[in-house]
Image (cartoon, rainbow, N blue to C red; front, side):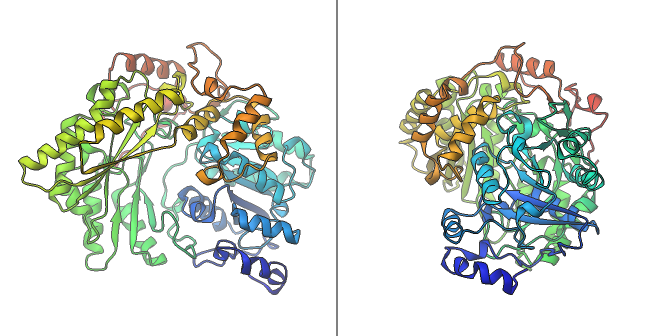
Length: 593
């Protein structure tokens, strides 16, 4: 809450900063609970800019769940932009939580969401600006517990020196259990012992204990899904109401970490999805809602859901947004139900250019299905198509690369046959990054030279196709992501050196200093390219062995071997493929059938 006391300190800074609305709080839909009355105080810290963090659905879930507890309060903190940091430094002021305006140091737990490896140095800078010791070993008795959750906790080793505890898996029940146990232990034992006790909670890994941790699984209940959330003061990257259709993906594409670490599949019932969408739109006033999933049209009743919501929101100007679609499930009827007055871009993810390569990555998708899905969209009025592709995949050949422009040429040929105008096609092409807990965790990443050669080859092939644009992800950024994602404890020193030399908000290209990376790597005798392109051996001890997501390591290796022979695996919605999750974690998939 903005008070006279707060303004007396920060008014001049807010006046001078580029976007003061990032730092004032008091958004419509925020809780603004009383800090002093709360028995347990939790701060959600997002190591990226406000407009990115406030869009993160995981943060919205935890913010809502914790604040619903009468004895708890949850506040938010986003990484300030560089201009705001400089202004704080001039006035000798620190960071503050968005709603309570309290220093992060005054909270019981500060929980960082590690969504992307390039945010690591930002975490350290946010600790510094909060007057919290960077290294966990240097923290004092009254310092908050520093927690980290999110996809990057699949391998905690690079950040192990800075984080007290890592939350592994779904956070809905886990975060509540952590803060409630902390409340019971605070003041009764030393901080180090509290951390040891917290490590006994299922789903918690503490580097100081170096315990084995098994991921937590939460069921998708209505109580755990927000129907309101803070509305940003200016447009964020995902400025809409969100309803999570399902968690997990049974397709199990071999490069995809999200599908493997979020098993088993859990679908919400159609009636609950429709109800949540109506309530969320009503409470927030958004004119757009998104049906969120790793593959939203894999939900067994997606057409019924869209039919009910289209009927409810008819003539209201409220539209639906669907994430990237499975081409084998995108029918003309589905395209029609998802259509709206804006006719925004439709996104389809072929991932690779040939059927052989799609079998290698276990995409379970044919060229004909991709073309048919695209033509269905064009027939229904979309003239902008976005395709996602990945290059540098294991066992890739130049013939597979050539398949990307060939696929677009065949789409154009089909348009001619059907008397349709060519669509505007954008191909977003990323570089393969091997990730822990996937069948490709052992695979090497292409070197920068190899990637650049492939990009050059694709650009030359694309020249004769006039209705397509290729956008390539920065290969060096992908290399650094691979360097971090499979790194070991040596990377803690590397991250600290980067932070000490001013590295901050490095997920933004303009802040990435590649020369600094080279200098520090040389100083610490680390070869970034060699480590990123390393091929691990079958029986090698992997840095993330202490973290268990339920999938058998032997099954992952079998999938890697099947990839070499371009053999696909049946999706687990169709038939159990014995990956181990359900038996190891005593759980089961939940489908709305």
